[in-house]
Amino acid sequence: MSEEFLEAMNEDMDSALDALARSLNTVRTGRASPALIEGVQVDVSSYGARMPLNQLATISAPDPRLLVVSPWDKTTLSDIEKAITVAGLGLNPSSDGSIIRVPIPALTGERRRELARLVGKYAEEAKVQVRRVRKEYNDTFKQMETDKEISEDELKRLFKKVQDATDESVAKVDAAAKAKEKEISEV
Image 1 (cartoon, rainbow, N blue to C red):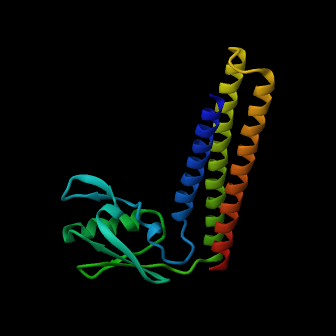
Image 2: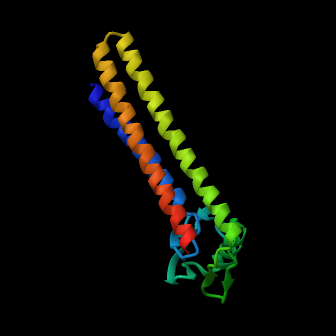
Image 3: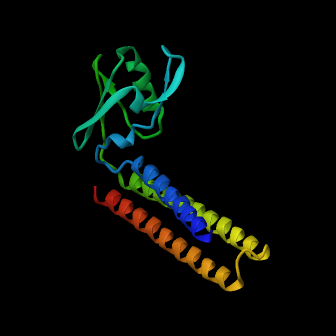
């Protein structure tokens, strides 16, 4: 029974790492990547709804400094352009009536430091989530021991497994953050 809890714990920790990866994909590194804008929320006036950009258009990166957004419905062109502008990514899209070109400007030293701080914030949020998972499962195992479902020795073994998984996840978070910071500084 406790093995099922350990599997669920590992899945919960992996989901924290997945969330970190998604967050890091949104951090602009000076290279064009469709992931940078695919989650931008667009208020589509003709549909009366708010939708992510990747559900309204095809996003491509024909070269390292340019993203091209091709809306499936041309009536959404101005809504998409406005959403990219106000998304807080420091991007200035331009439209030619059928597609939107989004040039990716080179990063300044100050912007690199800002992005590095943002990466650190995302990494810390992921670590907090991992620690929250650790606490949740440690509490579950303590309750199981109190209810005499597991022995004290089993409790200690489970605590060690939880801590090992936590340490491993935190190391993965640190490695991902360090890799992203390196990517930011190299561009």
